[in-house]
Length: 170
Image (tube, rainbow, N blue to C red; front, side, top):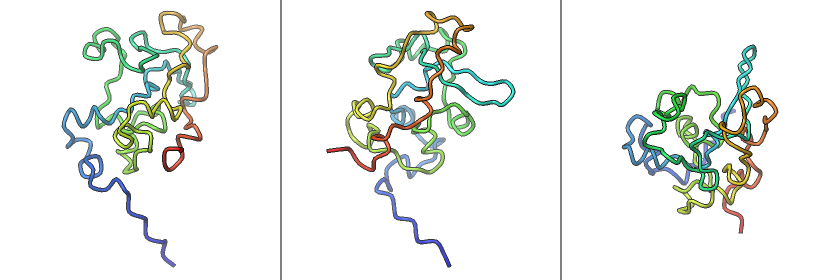
């Protein structure tokens, strides 16, 4: 018995379905970012297991209300350990959130309804509860590294129920 044929994606023909990550132009690549800012949260890694723990503490350059970097062009100069995503590392980084469009596209999956490229609205990432807006409890300047364990949270590694819906709720 063979598996039923996979239903064609409504996103077929769109640039993230027709190009590899490596083939995308700079603006196409940048537009894949949904603006959730989960990647801008401080993370801890268990040295024994490799497990990643998110915190609700952000990078000092994150504008937590806008969910954007205050100095995107110079972020690597100001924050030397800032990881610039590229086609190679999005396939291997184990701390990207499950909703990350770079990760989804690398895996050949569709973008969620709330992604601005699908909804046409940059606010749907907030509406769906995916962004860090209203959840950041300080920056790396406010919380010493030795206290980060006290700020571990689960939500950045999870996808909210309304974000998993097939389409925007009415």
